[in-house]
Image (cartoon, rainbow, N blue to C red; front, side, top):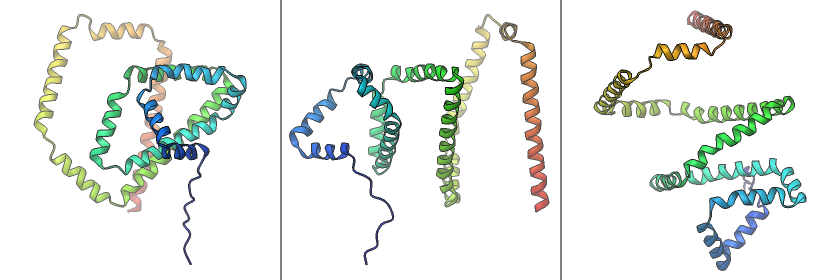
Length: 244
């Protein structure tokens, strides 16, 4: 009897079936390649505005499908990473290097600004703030879980990984590091000598704009948290020593 695989076959959606037919049709494939060569990032805002506001029915359907669309994009990126993992390292480095060189840094800088404003509006309302907090917490927990699974593989060959890292550290050329640190120290000294405003004057200007009570409250809270963490560490150490 032939054993059946426990891994479920990935579902073939309409977009995949259409793409397969397009790739199998020479004329359509050539048309897609021509469109890919002529992609203009400046045309993206108009496309988004048209999709969202041109037709109310399409807009409502689009808003309703946003969760599934986000999950589709996440799975798209995940599968992209899985497929890239199978590429030879020289080809992968060259490919990622081309991607890095082609990304527009100005557009990349706008991301935190635009979505920071959106997040600020969401957090201004108590109800949406609670939902946003739950979403952020879920994303953080998912990221931590993924990091935990990723680092758990280190237990299988910890000694080999440690030897590789140690060998790399032992073979590090310390002479350039020394010269770099020397230049940074000299630059720091030159900056300090060239300054016309002292650190004390700047510190006084900064402190004059701050609430002393809030500062002392923050310092006291930090000290209390530090003491509680220190005591937890001491208690843990004592229990560990007693166990031995």
